[in-house]
Image (tube, rainbow, N blue to C red; front, side, top):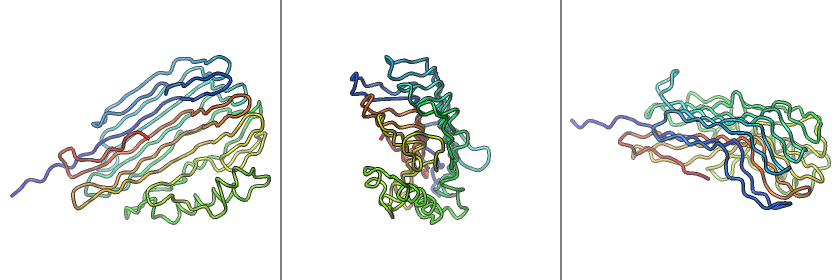
Length: 292
């Protein structure tokens, strides 16, 4: 009698503290800082971010990243952790924060027990986020994807997930004084899903106290640019269970994304965490997604 290969798992996680592509007043590409990537067999990686300053445009006082992967202590499966932390963030003395944390933890069932991972964003937060000196209260929604269903129903097929994401889009589309660019990017009745393989939403429902024009997780600040908070992208790559490969899910969280266009020109991404993984029937044939 043939012996079936033992089920295995390919781990995947990345994290970085900050990267940027600046055009004005100075042209500079800042490569991902404190970037770490988890080996396919899991284990643990850590990187310390030293204090950083680029002229008077962009600085932070430090931070760290970590990724980890190993057997789950709760179920027959595999746990992956991705964390990115920055402290003392300052962008042009307009966007500042004492501490920003992006954290994703996923648990994949062992092959044969389901293919949809559970995911949590516990620990993800903004500490003392200020815009132009005004303290901004952030309404988080760390449960935007909800719990994993016992019947292994995908987030992409869950009407409750789609409803929560659609509500986020509706808050933006119906906001007062919505800029023209935002009305085009977030039209009424925008679908929650992009095809069958991508879902975009935010772990931030809204903000209070910000200057400019805040709507949902977005702030349009004249004379500075656009500020996007807690952006979450979920991807699904379909597998082939008949050939021993399950679907692969990927979760990518960026806590602050800036599109500047006045005092300075360029883009900045702060605290990005990225996690997924894939199970297979064995023999090292699990599916691993690459970089974006």
